[in-house]
Length: 246
Image (cartoon, rainbow, N blue to C red; front, side, top):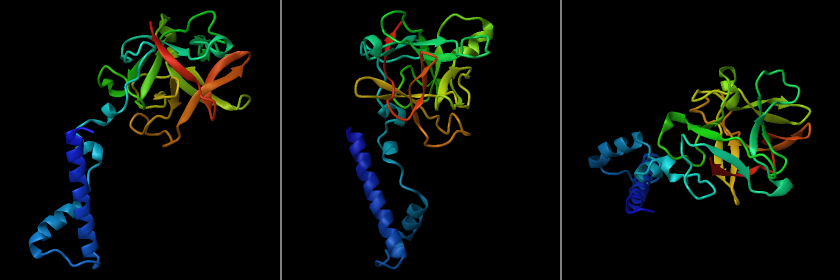
């Protein structure tokens, strides 16, 4: 912790002790402070102790680790990346955009993973942050994910990730496209560090999606749909991925 953070911690604890003493005194558990401190007493009662991260002088989003690609370079807004798996052979396979089985959409609208890392490469994506603050992307930061590919004007929205309704036959909510960019809705994801790579999460925060349920994060995994690996929200066995810059 920096010297500024240590000082902030000390100030925070002393302020907390002072307020605690004042509250106990007001309840009659201890002798009250002298009348000369009554103004300070009332002032501190009205002001809650700020969280430690505010006293540290470091913005909260900067305390989270930067996301990095397979070369160890920080992921950048505006750059394109392939979402690749950490496995090999049948355990591997990049992420791509494809047509959903039985879909009537005129554009590809499903988020899939190839059945092996032997064969086609995944389609590049880009990450869009809420508020566009800074070039880097941090863990647990709300992001839109968009396939960064050439497409017709009619299909542009079908490159932006979202989560569909619950599929009864597969027992999961499937990842698809048709989302929006930088809007207060449910088209937001997060990325967190895993032991060997990263996990994708779906849990839009209250700032980006006021109507979404709070504290209901779900991990992104894979289900089989008509012989294809479809990305979906799962309870266990989350998909572990890395990122390769295009």
